[in-house]
Length: 260
Image: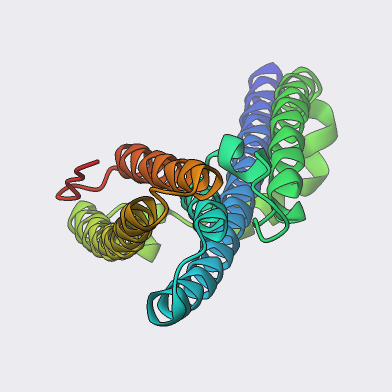
């Protein structure tokens, strides 16, 4: 009789431990889901920031084209160069570029970025709370096995060996991981090409501004005020080129060589 009672107690303890481990797995899954959601929010904020930067570049491009046809005002050239620099920094994710004022036309950071930061803090707090709750659940369930007896039959029905679902098939898992790596590499390659194309375009625009500034310097040789403005435009274009070079390093793009 004693042996039967001991065996029953052992079985209940094992069932309680299994339930506690299942709760811990669920908690970890919840944390992973929160991480994925936060990552998705960060990606969305980055894409919105890049889209805003591209829109600003299109506006700058149109204004440069007009100035090439009708003549360049050195003061406006300097403004365009500063706006170009700000757009590059926004695209590259530089908070300095998003916050630095470059006139009324300069793009501002979106509220999504600050929301993403608050989401990250929320995820960290959720991770800590979930881990503590999971550990408490494991210890409590292990210490009170008698409460688990009523659910023993239900747990036995719900438990299904992983081998029956194919989840522990190493070949299938390796194939899925390989496919995920290939898809991720393709996505990263496309994103890097997009970054290279953007940097090449803004580099060309900066060089166009620089060329217009040089022309303005030559034309304003007898006008000290305009000569000074032309010098400022030339310097602003050089700063924009340096910002492009810095953005290229931050984005990890290769093959974007700059000459200031």
